[in-house]
Length: 377
Ligand code: FE2
Image 1 (cartoon, rainbow, N blue to C red):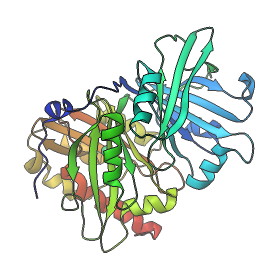
Image 2 (image 1 turned 120 degrees about the horizontal axis):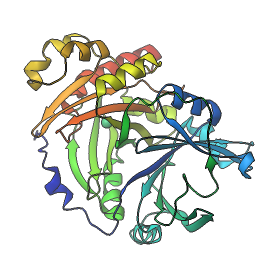
Image 3 (image 1 turned 135 degrees about the vertical axis):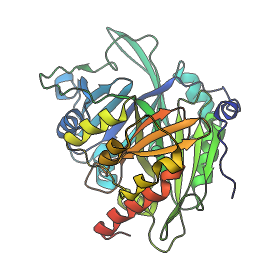
Image 4 (image 1 turned 45 degrees about the vertical axis):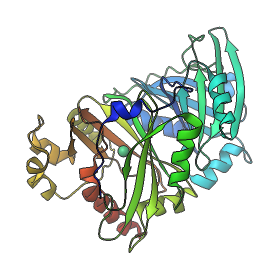
């Protein structure tokens, strides 16, 4: 079984440039109670209040809170009445990610290029305006009920989007040092991974930069397969997982059962100081997956010398992996809503551009212990 070679810059060159993307613009979750979710993202994760839209701004069917931390923008949207598409989404999936919005220079062209290559339309290009300028948005469907919205904001200087007003509560817990979205992982149905990898290659010009098979990602009981697609500048990286055969139910199958189909499994957010970030997150009540402390007994043997104090990493449960270019530190939260679906990864890269393959086994065994407690293994 070949080990994936990391030569990312070279691989990125193969990406087509018909769809230049500057980065992640925002991530929108449909939730049952946006007001309470906003409080959680402020209190637990240190997101800062940015903008609001709802009854007070003339919106009648929904309410949205926008929160920001450095380059990460999260939108929390809840339905105001029964029978709406947002309410149906929450009923079908629980709280979950509806929109992965991508920041582009030309939302009309991005849409036309994607649709021409076979993408299913979600939103035709539309211009929204207010006194701060105009924004053009368009959108296409991806796996499950998830969509990509292209956001063109070069002629806009407002706080978020037209229709939103500043949200200025006096309650403002500090940030925890989260910087940007590193990658976002999709879980898709058995046998669907290659279809979605091809979708990103064909429709969006992405390249498949890494592949993990069930030899890489398996424990005694369960397995999954994963391929990572990236755009040309490497700012957008989407690993796509599908379940693989195992003796017991894989974590991807558990996700698909509870989410009611394909969807976003985790958002990885980067920090420059994972020890400080995770210390704060834990003190604010964020629960993390823990590996046995024996993991740390052989850590330096496995990854070599690292700058961080191993005792601190052990206390916090932070994992380390190394590739040809350097090392990375990472840790995973438990699911952050009632259903065992979406969670966060906190990651600090010290040269490494990979995804922590050396941690997969310890990590998946930790997930299986949680599945065992839920009776879903
Ligand atoms: Fe990840």
